[in-house]
Image (cartoon, rainbow, N blue to C red; front, side, top):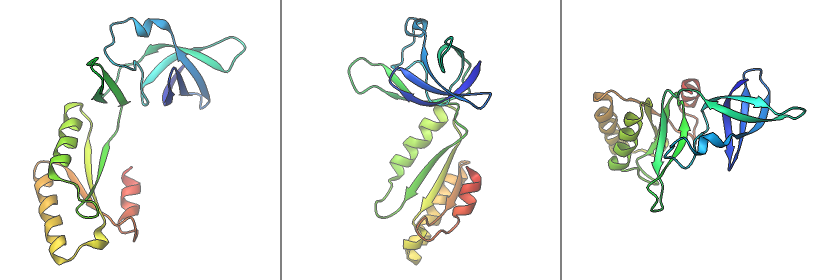
Length: 172
């Protein structure tokens, strides 16, 4: 059988099978010895092949299908291992606020560099539109112009007031 990893909890993975059913699965031992340098050989978003155990609704994952992309972070301990946060992402959306709290340009840039490095399309959504003064709206336009000039889509919303929320819902 084949399916999509939709939840990971330690050594168990919840797999949404192509038949629409969900199965709790573990990985077979070979994943741990294949020279994988990450703390988790399988991540949410991965597509896998698995076999159900006889007489059970549980299964064993025996193959990881090729990934189109993934997001990774370095482990915080000294092992120098990395952790795959998610795989096969369609899009990464950064919600940016210019006030209460302010998202720095440096943080936005790091987010975009990471997304680019792992081939994940990225979008910036500027929230709290309802809080901006005339001067704030001018700053917002400056920020948007910076990122649109280098090819990123940007959107303005107010989650509180519902401004442009339907458009974002359609986007995702």
